[in-house]
Length: 379
Image: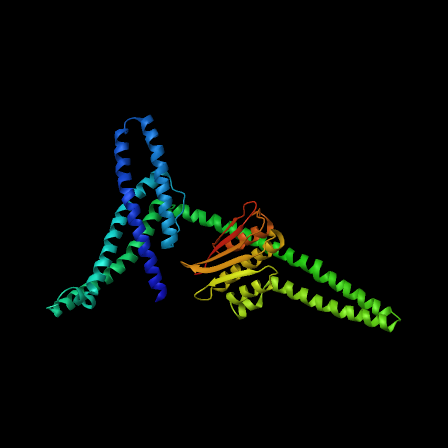
């Protein structure tokens, strides 16, 4: 219920902002139409008029796309041309005005629906039956208006996809290319992961096992009991270090706590194991599905590891939240910056995220801070 209320409030805010943008789009479309009519038979003048109109239309459409993405959860492709942008704005303002009517209906319905509770404070109620009937009518209008909020929000998304999105054939072709690319990226990521595991085992565990074997060999050949006991003590300590390193490798391969206790606990363990203080904010209403939780964990784990190794930061901030059927992850450090998104580590994370139709963005200007943002579909 709370989620529905929050979504309704967010959509209402989107309609309110859409009403404001419609008040700008309507005069712009009228001026654009008049300007194009004046230069319709003058090719050179038409080009001179179309150019600034296209720039203004593009900015207005980008504002609409941002509004749809932020408040409605609608992601519309940005491959439209100037003509498509003008056609979209020529129709979009009507939905903006319709949204204004819907919001006005909500306020009127709420006012009449609750008049029975406050009306006696401001006037003498001589016909309670009429007031009760009016309150029921106001509540019914409020119910219809709230349904209208969800309906207009749906129409907003469909209208934007119709005018700005690619055709069905283009969408299918892009999807095929995207799937082929993500599949190749997953294969490369698997190979990179295998090489990393082999390197961890070879450079870490194997070297420590060799050192352990050498200590045991020296203890076995020693004729001095005191020296032999000292070597055995060192071997015992070395075996503990080998076990610790082996647990670390196993943890990096796949943390069992992710299956046993969920994503939140797994991320808390990442924060606890980090040598740099990590402030974790995890706002999850429910446990994500396994694939999304797995990718989210590795995004946080690898980003924190990279920040510790390369950024020289004194603190790290991790935020995980679920927004509009998307799992949004943000990892920020205050180190030296300059991280390369095309590097093997970040590229591997991008491939993991892309395999679930997600998006990974890295902002790391020289001097910092570095921010890694991942958006992963969780439905």
